[in-house]
Image (cartoon, rainbow, N blue to C red; front, top):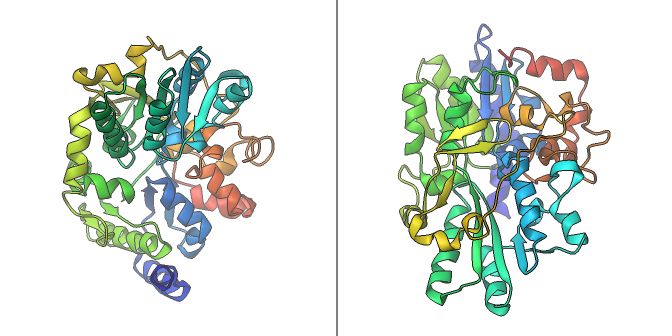
Length: 387
């Protein structure tokens, strides 16, 4: 594990933090959003915010695909799973995401629905092969990182001529969400947040590359630094962002050079393009309707589309009004600002998706004890972030 340990060197992290404190100008307040849930967990796990000066503030973004899935899509999946002859396959963290009126896939399974947790798309494919009398639906979610495996499963289904396999497609797109955060007027009830730059996602960028972020740097004059998941990756990215702000630059820089290129994984992109096309609009929890914010199956593969195959409808549903998950995903609130956090809402009894997923901000703050920080210190960190 020496290679990983090198990216978790505490002394080196403190040296970089001292450099940030030295270069951060006292007259400037720096507000940086880490989009990816993996970065949020790294920041919480290693206490990186504690190393930063008070005028360098981190804002948690909507980088958790389970968290951003709107409650109506959960309700639709539950309704589908309750139909006779349907087997719904899903990743484990989706099982406990609350739907309307306290429902969840886990509770539906306990009530008799055939819902099975899988570790990969190929697991769902194998179930469809083994049980030809069942209609097997894969609950496909995730950012650009998990879309290629879904495409490969579809390719295999075509090759095997599987008639009983389909997907409930909920794959969403990172660049569209970033643009929504920067310019959407549709979510003013949650508030807007001041953002001076972004830490670009790691795994997503291995697939799509750094080029899609050029638009944000040029159009919105916001620097983007793509970073890895380790603590030294993140804190170096923060230093790179501080330097861009100080120098009046707004460029896309790649800190994660060991895994990310400008063009990304062209083969994975080609697989996705073969089976998927853009949706005109898709709802994200916390962001509202995001234009071109998700994918759907191309018409020639519509027989694999569970929404069309089973005439699925997404019901209008509302989150628990006491849950602040939407505002947390947008970056205008901190997990501890939610009245439910740490009281009735815990990982054992989640009230919102941000506490369920391993990439959720609330789960990160609970797991690593960040909610115990002194209220005055916390308020100082988030003060001024909301514009």
